[in-house]
Length: 286
Image (cartoon, rainbow, N blue to C red):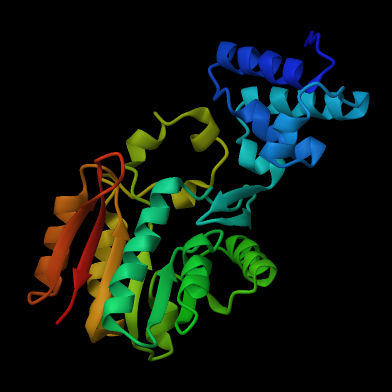
């Protein structure tokens, strides 16, 4: 690709136009340049008229090309920020999304009003973003996390070590590792796969061709995992426990009804995210 830039501000302008022309997020150029220059955003903005080392220029251009071909920026730079912390990510884990931070916040708010030393399990932990954030934000909590994929757990365990979070990780299917250990918990939190199988094909190539399918596809209507949860939750949840789910927009009421049928005396609420989409369901048992 022909790229005529020497200085940082020229590189950012060129990358923005290049990405826009290829239907990609224009902000990706800044993320990649910060990564290759090993600068914070404020450092980058203070250095706009500096010249770029030719080797870094080549690496930057190579990554821009990879991103226009569909590879997510987070996999190229190797991390994503979540709840104020930096989490390592690779193709074995779903990239943490900002809306999931709202799920974490919802759990923290409910936990502090109800428990002194809550036991929490995060199901389908992926990068460990939810479990690790909860362990660090609620230091008195006992946090566990489960994932069916060993490769995902390796990423989560690295993140827990790097961030100094005490989380116990288990390999297994949904709540089975907790059931098999005969454990009871106060809070079950999960952002399970919830995209209907046929809709996966309509997702951006950045998502469908690079993020793990096991973290996306939720069966014909996207609700398979929630149905399975309804069989397993009563086996592990304490009598005053909390269930916290992220759901796909438009699925919340159906999932809420499942929880009401499973826990007839629970206070079940649908919560809308910052974009006014029904993306969370919380059930508080009494």
